[in-house]
Length: 355
Image (cartoon, rainbow, N blue to C red; front, side, top):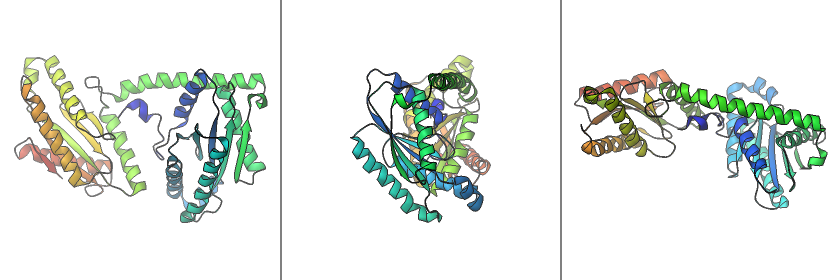
């Protein structure tokens, strides 16, 4: 998993967050050529009241559901506020986009019955013409559309068309653009700081602090989706032989080991170096114990095979645990998987043991 990627994803819905939206549109508007596009905006109606009446957990379930509905459009989706989402439409004619947007509106109204919630969201489609735009234009268009939906649109379905000529005064545009530039500059600085804080300097993988954050996110996601996931705790067998040569030789072996492990995981799997030794931590989303055992065996055999040409061939011992079978909290899962890894060591090494 890329730390840069994590900062731009909303963990509750899996959508891009505000920063991802700003970066994507700043690049889009700076690109040569002018193309038309539309933004489908979803703003939940009186969501604060819903949270008060039904509780924060039910509110989070609603937001997660909104994310699923919008991601089913197969268009870029961003959660830009607490209860505000944007979908970017670049293909098709305006009339086709309107048909698509109205279908989203109707689906939201139909499926909201599961939450005992009528009139759940305003859906506004904003058309942008082929003209040179700035990021301030996007924000002005969004603000105007929200006002129209709440004041004139009876919190329903609306279609707006925006032109630069209808924007606010030049001073307002300059202020919004300047604030956006400063936010993006701050984000770049944050990336650098994040890289130092959450990456392992030897392998360039996420470190154990990043792994614990990812584990908490995996638990929240599985609670919402009502799915399971598995984790692996990987410990090298007798890898200290490389440190008898030199510490740099030990570091190089750790790098090579991390490459073998990473190359034999699936897209979407997460791997981190655990602390500073020869341990690694893996999260396998939506993976049962049985399938996780197969992944663990693939990693074990790959290391044994690939390291035959190294100065000292190496093996690994792997512990396996599955949520929620072996624990419902991060601490319970980590304890379970570390116990399983120790059993793998004590029972002869070079094997996968389930908790």
